[in-house]
Image 1 (tube, rainbow, N blue to C red):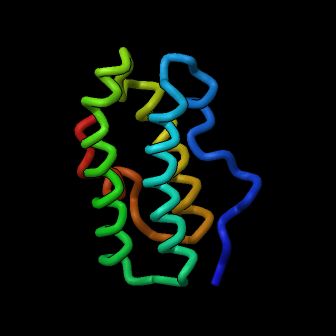
Image 2: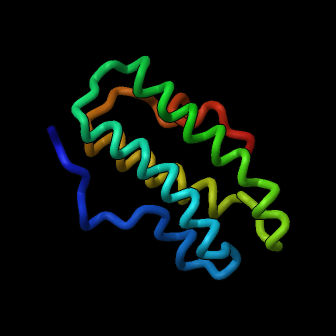
Length: 108
């Protein structure tokens, strides 16, 4: 089973931008990390993997109000940062799912 790249910094752009409270970025990161943990088990079933990305994306959707409450939102920088991290994960694990499909359940 392949381990994720320990040198890759998830959500780097969001962490660099003070507009996003770190504690909320940490929540998004934990949701992404959950998918990484799942992929590290060696799972290759694309339907199961897509389901895991859908669960992650729906959980990120649920954070939108909390971002709003903290004078932030899941806007362009956030969308791009999340997408860049997910694209890296897909490539790292050689998962043949398009980024638009992987994040298809997003509201942001």
